[in-house]
Image 1 (cartoon, rainbow, N blue to C red):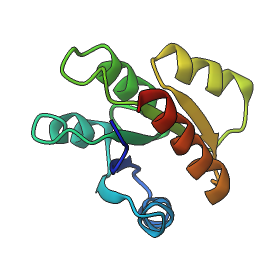
Image 2: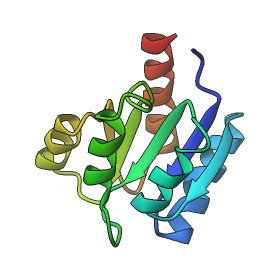
Image 3: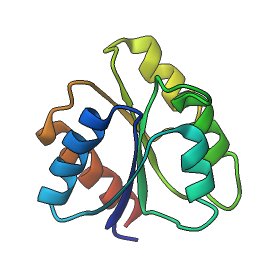
Image 4: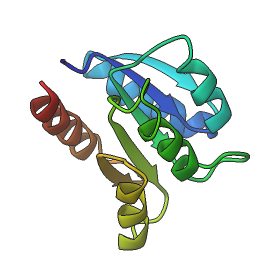
Length: 125
């Protein structure tokens, strides 16, 4: 399945706009929500081809939301890339343990993000 629709989950309007701009510029259809709770609610109605997940959010954080997505039979097929403000190995390891397919550090490099999406597309395609 080709990745066409991406859900951006980020409580920062600035980061959400920046990520959406990169993705739309690359031809993706982008939806945005601002919390883990809103993400899980969105997934009851829509099924994006991929999710770009922030970590630090009020309420359910990105790690908890990723785990809920990847452990739910209705959504476990949706790849998640975690987007963290800390470029630490522990965040990457923890993201992968929650079921994320990859991890990028903020500020996100457009080239790195698009390369990771292409790699996922090739694996899942």
